[in-house]
Image (cartoon, rainbow, N blue to C red; front, side, top):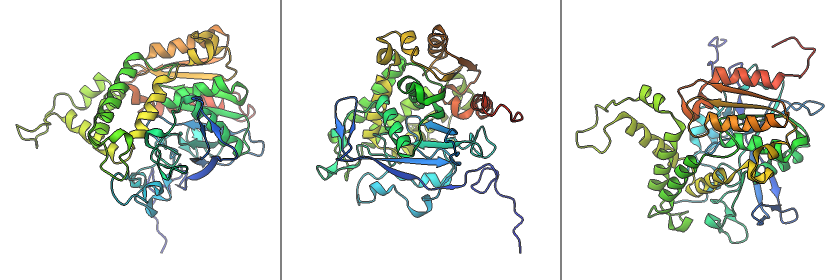
Length: 417
């Protein structure tokens, strides 16, 4: 008997899904071909986890590179085909005790930008070959502090070298080289991923056709740096941190949870939080309970779930890279307009009205610097109550921007989408 039940609207069998995806691994640094970091350190062992969707065109001119945000990974679309086979990342399986962030959450929901990627979606995999890799120093398949250092036989911990946004982009370039990809049609990123998209346009101007920067600017605000600093302080001063050497023992869970709770506040807006939570109390809470407000319960949940899926050392390294990135200092001696003279790509910069982590003013500063050099740039400030997270939540508005930007000037003979 034929099953006539239609596929779930957003399930792996739906027409707009890229389906079940198996992450790929690429060894991009070996003793014979080390990877030199901007700090001066040289890594002889680097494995990068990445995912790819769609088909690479015969002319290899349809590549879209995605850069993920702080706590995300290479799993941007579809459903993790390995999730049913494992409950923890393979890199943690050897640890029979102590900290082991689970990866099983990936089987319960699609990739972090599944609303944007797939057949017929704004980043149309019938047209584009999409690549997304996990950044160096993270904990989702790419070499990071929790991995075993082959030279010592123990986890790197805080002996892992400092990483930068520039290092991530250089490693992404090496990944594309290994795939036989030269020039890319577009690079897209939001938040910390947006900084990577901007760095691509500055570091590899001849390789980038379009750079799409969402909810990001040339540098993180001082207030943003301050919040990240408090988050790292919470982790480092957790009794279980043990100078970063907690693998196989109790994790600095309270410190990491506090860091995530604090950071999550910066991803939202005052208006959005008021609409979602207001001053509402949790009815099930006792009068003497520590948490009585709905927003408290929500933040506690965010902290607890984050501890179950992320590594505290990775959080320290990735937020440091976020704080230290300054496009003006890197490429213009402190002058952003001078830095932006390097750009050859068509730029799209989008801010969100209630974002106070990467503010509209900061985004407009970047746009102004690009305009001073006569470079092509489109700017959109999207009204939204969702704060910094709007680049993930405002799917319809962001989707229209992406669809238009990716197809502008491409296949002009084709009928409009």
